[in-house]
Length: 201
Image (cartoon, rainbow, N blue to C red):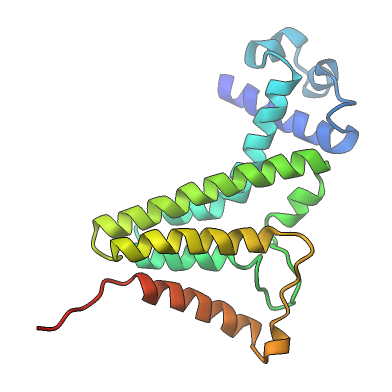
């Protein structure tokens, strides 16, 4: 019951922040909209800043929910990494040539600029944690070459940051490169690069 109440307060606050802005939303507004007393709100949150942080945490978790499902799946680490990159790089290269991702852009468009930036940064940190776990698991199980997986982490993070950078449209048509094929090639290149080296004697 306590968890449901907290979740409701976060969702009500999220809607109010999106509609009125964080600065123009009061704790009383949240209490009235959630049909809870102010005392109930202060049971869960000390102040508006704390509930604002909880909203950012929830929004960032929604953004990385697909990657977390991939991490927790029973797939091989190689398959997890491929699925992670496919999901993540839809924002880098997509068939329409538009820099967006269906599940996250509508959410971020509803946020004020400051909250959107905080949400994006927190989501990026969580994505890096998930990616690191996949690579570390692959190293432990012998699916990935340890030195190459360590290098791949920095490379994939750089690609992710490039995907998020505003004002940098990716125009592979100039290189006579099919966008979907480019995405597959990037992923195949990374996967091949971290596979254990087969030595012959």
